[in-house]
Structure formats: C-alpha cells, structure tokens
Image 1: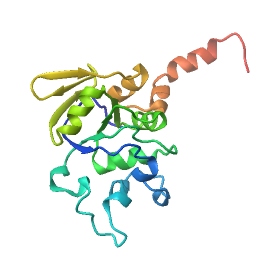
Image 2 (image 1 turned 180 degrees about the horizontal axis):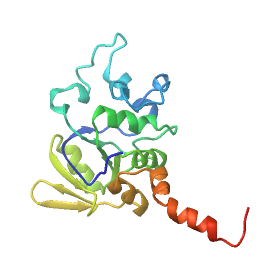
Image 3 (image 1 turned 90 degrees about the vertical axis):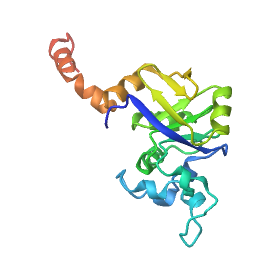
Image 4 (image 1 turned 90 degrees about the horizontal axis):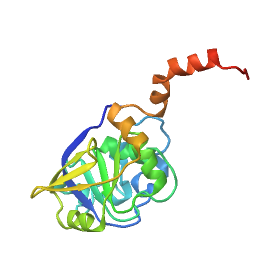
Length: 194
C-alpha cells in the first residue's frame, strides 16, 4: 500500500442513497483474491446493460467522470454485507476517496484498511458537493481537511490508527511487523511463559 497524504482531483457525484456493497461489486465477481481488474466490474449492474454495453445515462459512463478520483456519494454508502472487494473495486477503478455524510461502518473500516479514504462530512458541505459535480478539491490527510474552491476549507475526523497507517502506507499487518523488535523483546523478558 502506498502512503496517502494528499488527494487532488475532480469529483464525480453519485447521489443515490443506500448504495450497498453488492451494487459496488456484485457477488458474482467475488471469485478472486486479487485486487487487480475489479474496477471494470465496479457498479456493473448500474453501468452496463445485460448485453454488456454501457448505459449512457449512468454518471460513470459520461465523459466528465473520466479521471475523477473522488466519489461524492449519497447517504448510507457501502451498506450491506462486508466485503473487502468493494473498496478494492473502487480503488482499481481509480477512486482514491469517497465522501458522504454517512458511510456504513464496515465498509468504511475496510476502505481505510485498504488505502481508500472514506470521509464523512457535514450536511452543508455534502449538499454543496452534490450540487457542484466535477469541482476540483484537495483532501489533506495530515490536517484532516478538504480544500474547496473559493478558499473554503472544511475538516473531517478520522481515527488516529487509520490515519497513521494511511500516512505511513501500511496496513494492520504492516503496523505489527514494524513492532517486531518490541514484541520479541517483550517475549524474551516477560516473567511468565505461556
């Protein structure tokens, strides 16, 4: 996982509320343990007709959405079953961050563990982002802030452990591995043995 400090991108808006993990990546695509290639199946049933042709009216199929790395989503994004494939699919598609007023806890946890910023903002900021698709914003993880046009900055919260891991470019296992010397020293010097 690469360190995440700053994300600069235009936004694409998917205002639909209650987008669940099966809509993000349908169960029929969960046959792999590899992250690569899942992006082509992200939002598959929303993006494509049954014959595999693109639905021209779906936002991600419009020319303005190409290259946008920040998804502004409707409320309760990522609800449904837990699957790490959902953030993997979004990352492989090209998203670096998802912003909403409400992101399902399990999805948010999976996203942050895999390098996808899952950011919760206030209603006013969310409404503004929904009403202004394609706007260029900067997310700064160091200061936990989002810079919007017109010199407007809003802050967001993130738990310290997730923020530390994202900034360092490590997952939970990577964090534990970095503590190996301390762990080994503790095991050698403790007064009790298992």
